[in-house]
Amino acid sequence: MRIGIVCAMEDEISLLRQYLGKEEQKINSGISISEYIYEGHSVFLAVSGIGKVFASIAASVLLSTYKCDLILNTGLAGSCDSDLMPGDAVLVNKVFFHDFDERVYDDVNKGFDSDIDLLKLSSDAVLQLGIKHKTGVCATGDVFVDDSIKKDAIIAKTGCKCIEMELAAIAQACKAFSIPFTSLKVISDHADENAEDDFDVGIDRFTKISADYAMKMIELLVSD
Image (tube, rainbow, N blue to C red; front, side):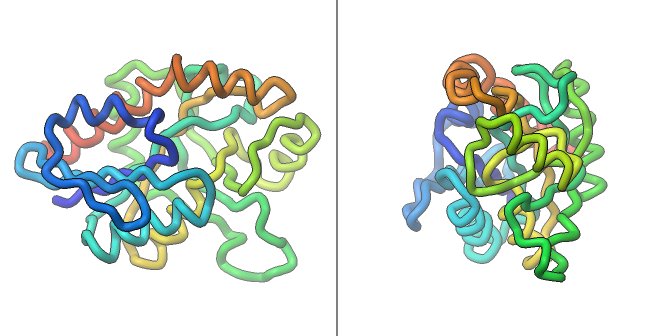
């Protein structure tokens, strides 16, 4: 099995490198990609950079060049649900672009569904790890949302439980290649006027959750 993992920032996933051990090779293709061997399976870890274009490139390289069988995504996101506090998580079952023009009648505006089997495995992973979470919609756009009015408009448009800057682009690439994906988003902030400060705190406090989730998913996938 060839497992692809995409994260936007090194800080969100650096602990996973310790879990996986010595990397087999580091690949420079405009983005940071490292290959690890775990229980005889290849794990490709891509740190894409922030935003939709970088995320799409990272996913496309993993799918086209390294022939990954599936894509996992994790990292921090802003809460769009008053019950979801920093340190909680959203198990994403569907993702939308919140900044894609609604006048364009295209499949993009229908959103992208997480793979049912991977979603079930993700549910098993978060339950085993004891992560407080909800299953729901994620919204993606090329903006860091730190405004309550903007957040409310995005919720009204998408019905999202969290908001971030990469997942829909990853999902769109996976759809183009007919490859399954799933994602767990860890809440760092409330996507409000305090979001920037809260996000900085979240990088220090909550990124271990992302790494633990990714490692648990790898373990479950290779033992399945």
